[in-house]
Image (tube, rainbow, N blue to C red):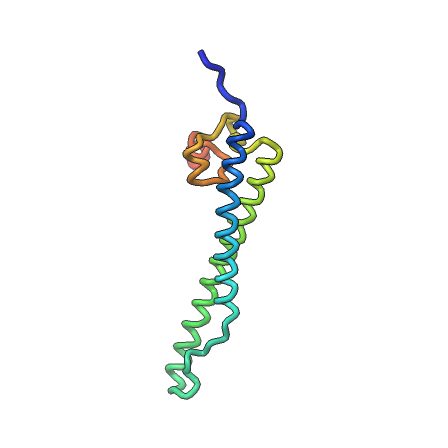
Length: 127
């Protein structure tokens, strides 16, 4: 009977590191795009239209800015989680479930590279 691995090999950790760095680059670009969108002061040419339309347009603009701000916050949180995952790679603790202590399957880590829980632990947490 083969002994169960307690951690991923250095080569496997390098693969995950490359994956996370790719995700980080994409996430930083998305955050930059969201920040640019929030900082645009475009009034969509409503200055010379009826006051009623302008009020509706302003309300819509505020809602859109709030939604964009929420997306930016989520994106920043995602970036933080990816950076923490990189630290776990450096510490060689990446891919180890923080509840069960078992290795998180590679497929899960490829789908959610910042995961700290195995499916088993995640399901138990939701009960």
